[in-house]
Length: 216
Image (cartoon, rainbow, N blue to C red; front, side, top):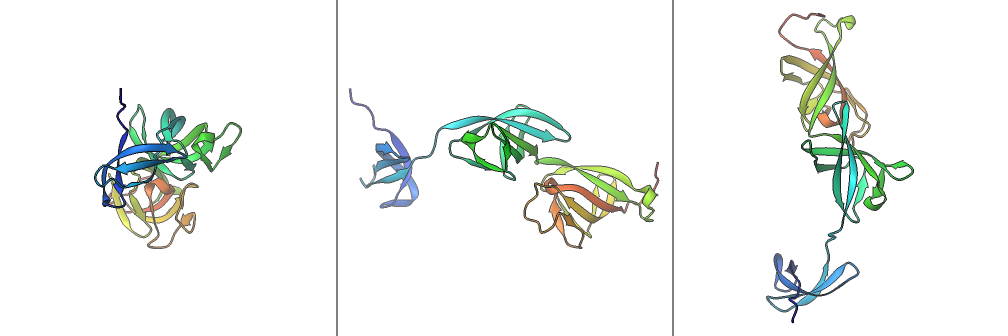
């Protein structure tokens, strides 16, 4: 009985460098395969994609609570704090950001998936942003706290007036989270400074609501 050769779809450097064509797999080893194009007969090397995956425990923090899920991570994947990925959890399909990687004996900021036991994350698809709201008149003792539920990529800009729900306010300052990357400072307080909601630890805003201020 003759076995059918394994076939894969890859680009052929001789006859089809832009589009994939059917190739026969001749030999494999060392992470590469020798393949032959069925269109022109050209034989060449092709890097094999890893099909092995490692199931890892994922702890997700969301709005002050946490739950456990699992994720299948390809073999050889390098994980790092700050990276985001799509997690298909029982609760929902969500975007999460890595906040810590737990090995057998310690936590680290980066490691190959083979060494990681638990991936600690924070949900960043939709987030809750805490805000300190100052009244129009500036009375410090009438400052209050507010929480805004927004998409993780929602942008807040220092000096800009915004409206969320029944609240209208001008952003005066932004304090960033420790896992926020790509910013020059952890506190933004110059007009034009901006940050997305998933990177924000706390907003400092001035109330611009049309209704009269009341501490009650």
